[in-house]
Image (tube, rainbow over all chains, first blue to last red; front, side, top):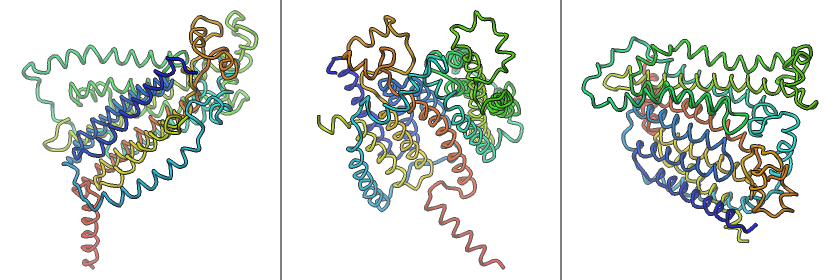
Length: 354
Length: 149
C-alpha cells in the first residue's frame, strides 16, 4: 500500500484540509460579514475539491453547487436586508467561548484517537452495510451509480423525508418573508448606457446552457455522478441568474410565483405518489419492484428484459426516474421560492435594490 | 504509525468543528452565528466522508469486472487486498456516508435560509441583529407593557 499514487492522494487530502482550517480561521477572525460570506464560498469550493479526493463525486457536485452558489446568494441577500455593519467585538465574549471550545475539542480529540485508522477497509463503517450495498446493487437495482441506488431505492423513504424537509423549509421562508414582492414592483430603471452589456449578453447565453446542464445531470444521475438534488439546485440557478442580471420583475413575469409554488408541491406529490402506486400493486411503500402490475410487466418485450433475473429492474429504473424527477421539481422550486422571498423583501425596502 | 498521521482527517475535522462552535458562541451577530453554524455542519459532513474513505478505493460507480478500466484501477494495489475488500475486482469507497451527506447539504442550505429569514424578521421588528441589543429592546417593551394598565 505504499504506491506513489496513494501517497499523492493522501498528500492532497492533508493539503486541502489545512486549507479548510486556514479559511475557517479567517472566517472566525474577520469582522466584516461580507468577507465572511465570501470566505464561506471559498471554503465550499475547497471542500468540494477535497470531496473529489475522497471519492465522493456526488457529494462534491452538491457542495460545489449549493455551498459556493445558492448559500452565498442567500447569505448576501440576508446581509442586504439586515444592513448589518461590521461585527462588534467584545473581549468578554471571547474568553468563555474559547475555554468551552478548547474543553470540548480536547474531549473530541481523546475520542477520535479511538476510531479506526483513516482509510481502513475493514472498519465497522466500511465492512458491513456499505459493502453489502456495493455487492447487491447490480443484482437488485441494476444502476451503475451505487450512491443513486442507495439514495433513491434502498433508502427511498429517507430521501422522501429529506425532500419534505426542503419543501417545509421553503414554506417557512415564504411564511416569514412572503412569496415575493407584495406590491407591484416599480419598473426597473430602463437600461441606460452599455456598461452592463457584456453581463447581459453572457447571461442570455448562459441561462439556457445552465438549464440544459441541469437536465443532463438529472437524467444521467443513475449512470454517473448526479441526480435530483444536484440538478434541482443547478436548475434554480438559471432563474436566479436571470433575476440578478435583468431584475426581479422580469423573472417573476416569466416564472410566476404561483407556478413555482405548485411545482414544489407537485414534486412531493409525485414522489409519494410513486410510493402509493407500489402499495396499490401489492408491494410496500416505495418498493419499486411492484411499480408495474404483473400484467404490464408481462407486456414488456422479452428483448428488453435482459437476463431473466433482470425482469424486476424495469420497475426499479422507472421508480428511480420518477422519484428523482420529484426531487428535482421540489428542490428547484423551493430554491427559487427562497430566492423570491429574500429578493422580494429587498425590492420593497426603500433605498435597497436587488 | 503515528496517530497524528493515521487519524489526521479526524483531528482536522475536530479543529474545524471547534472553529465553527467558537464563531457561534463568540458573537452576538445573528448572521455571523448562522455562518458559524454552517461551518459546524460542514465539519460533520467532512467527518462522515472521512469515515467512508477506503484506501485505494474509487468513487462508488460500478465498473464492469475485468474491463480495462477495472484492471487499471486495481493495478497499483496488492492483489490479495483487492481480492479481500474489492467488489468485482475494484475497490470502492463506502457509498452510504455519501448518500447521507448529499441530502444533508441540500437540507442544510434550506434550513440556513429559514434561519436567515428569521434574522431578517428580527431586524424588522427590533431594528438590530445583535443578540444583546435585541434583549435590551425586548426588556424595554415588556417594561412599557407593565406600566400600561
